[in-house]
Image 1 (cartoon, helix red, strand yellow):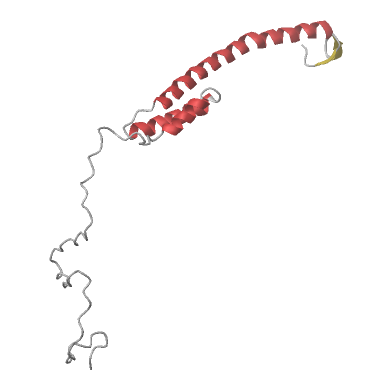
Image 2 (image 1 turned 90 degrees about the horizontal axis):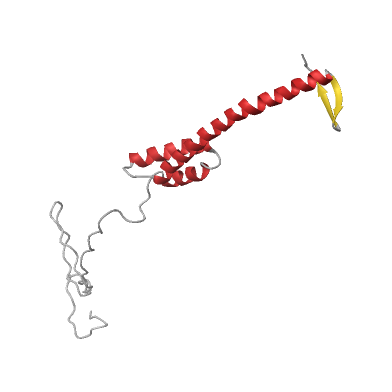
Length: 162
C-alpha cells in the first residue's frame, strides 16, 4: 500500500508512522530525581529582572488602627468616652505593628481634656445651680406653703415643704 498523500513513498513494513515534527525535536522526559532543563524560549524576548523596590515602605501600606484612630478623632468632639476607648485600642494596634498613629494619639488627648472639662463644668453646675434652685424652692415654700399655687401666671405644685 502506498501513502495517498505521497504516492512516491515506498510502503512501510510494520513500522509505526513517526509523529509529525512541529519544529521541536521530541525528547523523553527526564528521569525522576534528575534536574529538568527549562523549556526553550520559543523566540520570545527575554526581559531583565524587575528593579529592586524603592527605599522605605510603599505609600499605600495600611497601618493597623489608622482608620479606627480617625474615627476616634472625629468622635472625640462628640462622644468623649467612646472616643477615648477607641483611641486607646487604635494606638495599641498601631504600636504592635511598630507604626505611629497620630490620629489615635490626638483622639486620646482631645477626649481626655474634654472629659476633664466636662467633669469640672458638672461640678460647677451642681455647686452653683443646685443650691440656688434649692434656695428658691425653700423661699417659695416659706412664702406659699404646700399645695397648688399660681405664681406669675404659672401653676406650681409645692410639696415636701418643711
